[in-house]
Image 1 (cartoon, rainbow, N blue to C red):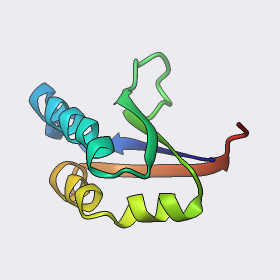
Image 2 (image 1 turned 90 degrees about the vertical axis):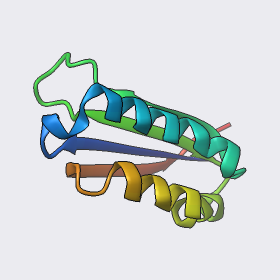
Image 3 (image 1 turned 120 degrees about the vertical axis):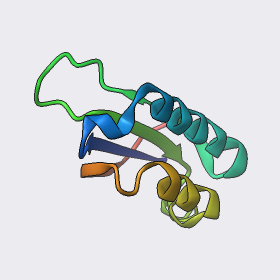
Amino acid sequence: MIRHIVMFRWSDQRTVADDLLRALGAALDALPGQIPEILSYQHGPDLGLAETNLDYAVTGTFADEASLAVYREHPAHLQMIADHITGRVGERVAVQFVVET
């Protein structure tokens, strides 16, 4: 299995008010129902325990690289990015690694 982790630092905290974070959360919560390749999916804002932390994280588990590729290019995923991420992110980092079952 493949674990996919993405973390964001917002470009401007004022662009991610509570209502926008709720909308982002709802959009992310909807993705597993729209993209069957997602085996598990979690996300949330950083707890603010360290100044160097990024602001938000998303993690998903996929059966294999092909399933991850389907997710990345899925219209629902691309629409969520366009609606809730694009123009708000100053920094993005990601990693994918094998999860032993």
